[in-house]
Length: 172
Image (tube, rainbow, N blue to C red):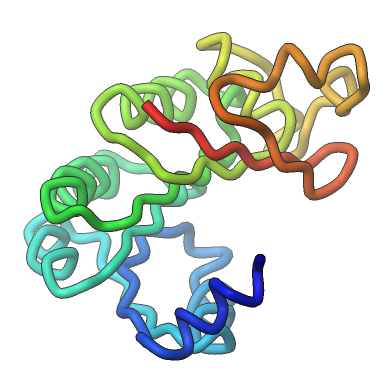
């Protein structure tokens, strides 16, 4: 299944708009290039919509939030949604602070994300509206087990990248 998606990326070489944290910006760009896509980074609110308009997808990572990038996330997200682009959210550290939690939840209320990728604590926070994390790492109490996995499956399912990292594909 993954091979089919990678083949499509290689055939179409999509331009992907990324509003990501400063820690991972280079890794994100290189990962997209390695898959055959083209990255562009733009987190200035006055630039975000125009950049989104020339892209095929939008990747939002809330790892280094500030009022400027939050505004850019909403502007780019609304534009991407209007154009029918794929939207991905990585709610980094949701549950670690009020700003991160509120921003992640507000983004999901305002936008229809195709993929929400996060660790167990971030996903749990998104489901409950509040939670705890150990910085950007999953709280040990939120490790994925048979007992709590059913709780964390929200809509269509949950894909696990390990015992403490999960990603969810939600459809609204």
